[in-house]
Amino acid sequence: MDVSGLEISSKYIRAIKVGRVGSSLKVIKIAEVQLPEGIVNNGKIEDAAQFSSSLSNFLKSNKFNSSHWIVTIPENLVYTAYKTFPNLSSEDLGQAVDINANSFLPGDRSDISWGWQEIQTTSKNSGKEVMISSISRNNLNAYLEAFTTIGVVPVAIEPRSASVARVFGSTSNTLVLNIEGDTLCSVIINQGFSRFAREYQISTDEKDAIKSILSEIRRVTNFYLTEKNEDKIESVILDGPAVNAEMAERLGKELGIKTKLASDIFKLQGYNNSSLALLGVGIRAMFDQKQDLSLSLMPVSAREASQEKRSLLFYGGIANIIVITSLLFMMLFLGTWILLKFLSTKADNQMLSLKQAPGFSEESEASKTKKEIQEINPIMKTEASLEDQMVYFSPILKSINDQIPSGLLLLQLNFSANNTINMTGTAQSREALVNFRDLLANQTYTESVQMPSSAFSESKNINFTINLVVKKEALKK
Image 1 (tube, rainbow, N blue to C red):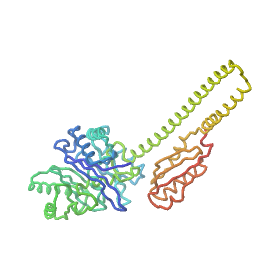
Image 2 (image 1 turned 180 degrees about the vertical axis):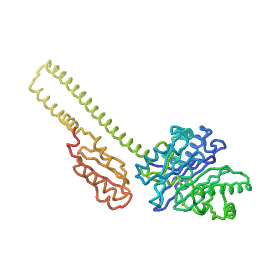
Image 3 (image 1 turned 120 degrees about the vertical axis):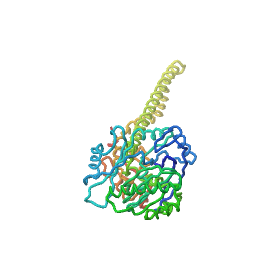
Image 4 (image 1 turned 60 degrees about the vertical axis):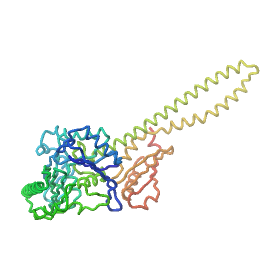
């Protein structure tokens, strides 16, 4: 599934496609456009028609062909809380979060959409901490309806702070300030996770703006350090179109904290340093959706959506195979019936005309009839053979789907008359491919599994072909 990253703020729409060159990341495509004033206000869509039109024109003009997107939205639409649970298994932790969500999320569950993710900590004895975020369904639906009208399919929607944090590694307390016009978004990151975030309106006058920014920084840092019992903010990173080196130098002197521009730190081929949040969603878009455990504000998480889509595609394929097979046999039956009807009528007419003709000889005509029967017999045998080979693929296909390990993708399945299923696909590793082959070989319906040895000449991103010969009795009703 081709997935790209989309950032929406009150001022801009941005899109990005990230790929790999060897072990390094590379920006394949990136673009931004400034939104007309009033379309999005404090994160809320005020003019849905104009927003949809602006987004559609932006994607078309920049030739973004992806239909599936990871989307990051303004922080002030999202409520985020942090809670610690006992050391539970992943499944039990999810149930515990769901049971207790009402106690720390604002509003009625029917009026909000929410998601969560586990925060990885270095301590094994402190329990498991989770980040839980929610958004009003009305605000979320405004985005979803706008996306639907132009064919944008969101795989996941996350707050800006989550996107920004993804860009950083295991840094200690780092304050990231994004400034776009009169909007200041403050995000404090610790150990690769957002720990505090808020958006704030500042003055557009340069002198007043610096004072307003300093005042906001002190409010945010004092609250965070007191709330989290932390010692200090280690560094400040300035991000966004309104920041510059002079601002970084002045803020650094006033705060006594090391202050840098994001553009001086993050050097990525093709990246224009427009927004760390955009880079963050671009990175998430590269994740295997089946393994994506990051927070999503969608009613269905990215991993669940991937699993559901995978199942729908698989069972849809089975349904198509069954329908096509049924149509073929129906056409074969009708064709045979019409042929027999035609031959019967023709024979009756011939017999009648021959009997009425002078010099009619039954012995001579019997010989001709025998010859015609011999010509028809191969057709009838072919039909009988096809009916005898009528198979019921669904249980076997479902079994094959259940055996697919993580890191392996089936691209095509073909069926041949000699009870062979031909599979082609890609495997991320040799281990995943061998595991899949061995699982298939151990199935009760398997007679043999054939795979060219050339598939093992590669260790990663292996294109493979597997021929699975199915036992005849497994294909009969």
